[in-house]
Image (tube, rainbow, N blue to C red; front, side, top):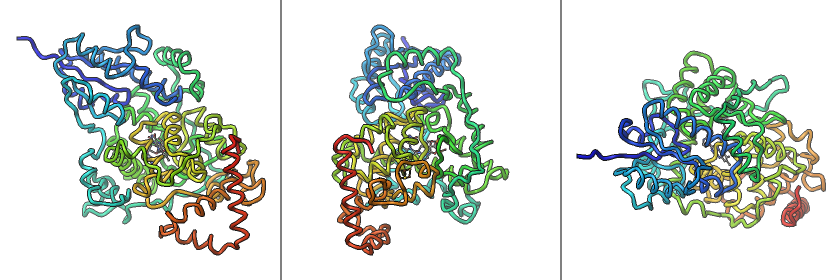
Length: 512
Ligand code: FAD
Ligand code: SF4
């Protein structure tokens, strides 16, 4: 009797040795399939460093699987006959290797999962257990709630994981959240730690050459690529963060500074999202560092909240509401994304810093994404799908399940307040408080209506005025609308006129 032969298709963001679809295989008999395909590289113009990371990490992972005794069929991008899409590569492998059963772990993108589910093949789907909260579990939690709140979901995850919990079910430190302590600007005398860098080995150099040849027309530079591409390197990046940055992570989580792209951030999101790091291990390490007295509670809790709170929360929302979530546009925005998002050529210092480091490193930290580039797109009324495509393209860590809800829901409020209770809109005063950008800017943050006034100021009030009908009843914006109403009519008119002029310049294709 012939034995059934099975195959697991392992995707570029599934590089984990304990991936459920891999665990289903008998390495001595079955096959692993991995493929670099054109369809995944250009549905948005991905940053060349993102493509390089994924291809290099895939090649290293395939090698490591081989060392563990797996038979791996690896299809490089430039292999003659590469059919160019994952469903086609899979169908070809199933036919050529006489496969009886395919194993797949849930995808990170609705688009790809729909395409693979449409294949007429015997596929067993496995839940992605690398997350703490399964898709169904999230849907059960969310059922019947009109609006979701991350904070309540996060408490459930704290209880479920037991992280930073006392034996009696109360949170360590007497509160669930220490965010109020995590909003300090960076004092001049505080220096960010050196970044851990990983030189390119021969495999990565081959990939960098391939990417340089094939994707030089995509925005972003390959020059500064120094990212971990193996599990061991990702672990080294993580240990570097634990030792040098985590203690101050909480305090300066929201700070921004000229020429400091990483500050006290972990820079682990890309490695985590593609499977080089394990969520539960990271959380256990952070908790242990707290109990050992190596990091304060606001840093440990703040970090764990990002991982088991925000990260799991946005994933749950994504899978509950795709594909229609991607179409939402609650403010009816129609303005195209300004060209300077792709070039960084703007006189606004905060924007040129955030975009410039994005082009150089495929990285910006959360507050730059939310309160600088995101805030501008929200205030300027940019079409949400264009903003989402930009974030998906330019960041090394960007995968639809995490990028889309963060951009469409958190930044653009395009889901009408389902993900977050109010828009994260802010004037230049917020950026001034949290950064040193304004001192060196061509615009004046203290002015709102003059020709040299900070564009964020008038655009902020213009946004609130033009969306009064939708936002006026939001109790979290009550004080702000009261402030607007206290302004003289002349002041309100001047803000509106300046806002209109700025938007007209964008419409004329001019950079600000
Ligand atoms: P740190 O600041 O050190 O935080 C630690 C970890 O917490 C991150 O590595 C990440 O895994 C997790 N985390 C923190 N905030 C979030 C969040 N809001 N959602 C999910 N995870 C979070 N993150 C992505 O991984 N991929 C994306 O495509 C992505 N797109 C974003 C788009 C926008 C508009 C915004 C506002 C945020 C986005 N984020 C995304 C979340 C966050 O900005 C990045 O995870 C973070 O900047 C990565 O850098 P870090 O590893 O240094 O993070
Ligand atoms: Fe940004 Fe305005 Fe400050 Fe310039 S003045 S850096 S545009 S917030």
